Amino acid sequence: MSWLIRLFLLFTLVPFIELVILLKINTHLGFGATLLLILLTGALGAGLAKYQGLVTWRQIQKDLSMGIVPSGRLIDGVLILVAGIVLITPGLLTDCVGFVLLIPPARNLIKQRLRIWFQKKVDTGGVRIHYGPFS
Image (cartoon, one colour):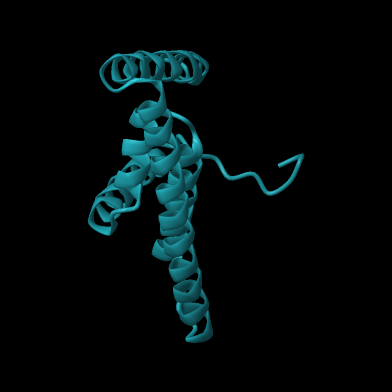
């Protein structure tokens, strides 16, 4: 499946699923409680993402000052950034994904899978490094 089709499905199916979930919750809890739930999960998630992002930033600085390449911590930072982005997006499905990304053991598992996926791409030639506009 091409990346364009995957991107299209991501930007159409995810919002549709989020809407269906929110409408179901709205029928059970009411509009006010549903809105409060969205706002609370967004605020809590943004706060947690900010805290973990600052902790990770300090760890990166510490590693750099000791001469250690912080590759794993940089991946943590990117995953925390993604978590923050999806947590401020209205919807409970994206909030669940964001909260999972903020759990360090879950993030470590995702990092391992990303490393394996990226290594396979490098080994099969699926990743090309360009050093400039004409390389």
